[in-house]
Image (cartoon, rainbow, N blue to C red; front, side, top):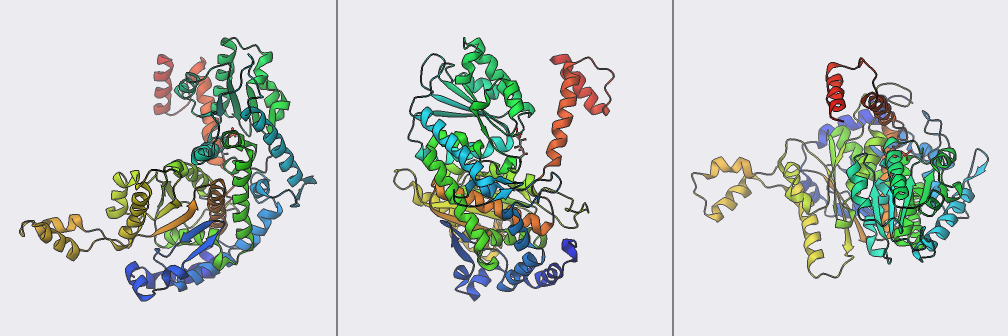
Length: 546
Ligand code: G6Q
């Protein structure tokens, strides 16, 4: 595949961009009263309104040409067919199989993938029901009250997000805790809340070798033993989610208490696998199944809708436009829903670990920018913090607003205020406030005429700042599943267009390896240290303090 910049549609977009970049979004709306209808669509319970982006129908047509020329349709078919598109790890990327119905068919290396997926789901359902009904007992015969998921990265962010987002569906008194950080304060704070007789630890690790997770898992195990749980009774308190049976057994967890998954499930795409056990425990397996169904509905839409009416494709193309033509280096994620507070952190990993790459699949250096920096937190909180930069900063940072039309609480007035803020922000970013408006406003406020000229530039908001709006009727297991699948496929499409492998993470592996070396130096006596003078001195300082 030639590089992105060598493709004919990329060149066409570059010359087209020159004719659009000085347009004003409010003018585009004024010229076409049907702009919302033309630039919004519904799929799998979600509505995407991308009309507040600085593009025209010509821009879209050229972006769709780009998607075709870059092979989005062929790569999509390859992913769903189980082709080993993760070439640097020689693996398929088959997370879509995790949410496929029982009657779907897919063979991978001779294995019936769908049967294997549903067998594990059956195991998860049976276990979940035993724990939630109080039949699964701790070592002193008491029912489980606290679930502690020990995992990091993809083995933490998705389950933690979903457990928080679906809390209104919990219908159980089980307390869910997530421990990820190597900082002992993380586990220590959770252990203080738990009773060793009624705590259940889920060790969630695809590799079962990740340093932070194994450190926390061993400390949790030691804590249980110190609290008078016998080695034999640990089986009542530890289960594993992993692909590595040997390491699970070596840790001391009975493989009978292990929920397996497979190397074709990438860490950041694993929330749909056994890694979702904590979600099923929190909300019940039926709700977890609904979460999978919501994602599957988005998969079906992504597979079957023409590119021009395909939500993940359009969201991806708008992102390409903003990143590679408008030059935006970041994307803000603003969920106007407290329960989605962890979505920006989840998407940080999904987008930046998948497409934060500078090298194309063929090893060539990319000639264009790839993943933007992802930032954000829940609205309205973000409005009182970083939104200042969105409105008046020197960089144009597009925003994805995400909101539900119906709340999951009964407090009066709150939801109208929340939605009003959400819609007002997207409108304000687009319209801005001109010098004339600022002047008139200050005159109306009675500000001294002499002071007005000096104040005007500070109060002007340039506007013309792009945003998407993603709406759902309510935040449910189905809509959450569809939302996460939407972003997964958006990231995939962008990866195809940029020509990168969205499914490896060699940068993450580098950090893991270096930390192992330095840890052995911190704890050992190896001399002299062979690092740069900064790292050598930092290690020496820490060694003296430890
Ligand atoms: C995700 C990454 C990474 C991974 C963690 C945890 O795609 O590979 O975030 O999920 O490093 O890995 P384990 O699940 O193997 O412990």
